Amino acid sequence: MRKIFTVMLAATALVATTVDASPERGLEIAQEADARNQGWGDTESLARMVLRNKAGKESVRQMRIKSLEVQTDGDKGIVVFDEPKDIRGTALLTHSHKVGDDDQWLYLPAVKRVKRIASRNKSGPFMGSEFSFEDLSSQEVEKYTYNLVREDELNGEKIYVLERFPVDKNSGYTKQVAYLDQAELRIHKVEYYDRKKSHLKTLDLKDYRLYLDKYWRPHTLDMVNHQTGKSTTLSWEKIDFQTGARDGDFTEAALRRMR
Image (cartoon, rainbow, N blue to C red; front, top):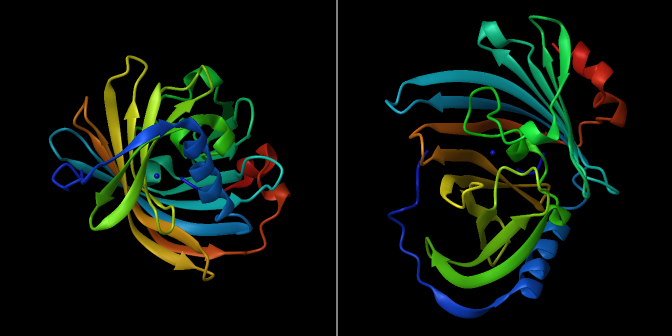
């Protein structure tokens, strides 16, 4: 999944350049970033999820992730938990769509049941983390309207600052502010605003690595919830591209067979 996934950048200096707010230019930048990420096919990866409560106490989870690029629609993905033992085999299947609601199913091995995630519930936390079900869908261009609000400098790099507004009325967010470097159009930070238009969360994407001489992937995603003081870190241990995944690997029947 493109993503799409605790250290805030509050102390980092931002040098702003005023530009005329531009929905047209914002959309162009989002479309170009998406175009640069076409053709990757499929991936398999191993990841580690660390959940922290307000007091800093941690719990660790190990997971496997499979993703499949779909040229005519949103991407497909499966997340399977291997550790700890009490959630082993729990799996999330996502069929993202460019237009309309995404489809998501959660397999619960304890009851051997697949639960469909209703669109109105996608803003809820995924497995107790600070990532919502919505955050784990592929971020298709068509899911938002855009606005280029300014150009800045972040960690010595020139960046674009885009506002993106979800078109889905069931989204848990009214607005997201994304920071993309101008050189490669990689997202380095996203600020999320809740339905009350308050700053809810910040996602920092770090440790980008280049695959197949074309595709950049962050290996660390830190999500901080400013309203609860909780945070979640997703770190990728390995990512393999073009492993031969097929559409049949991303069905509800396949979800039940995941181990």
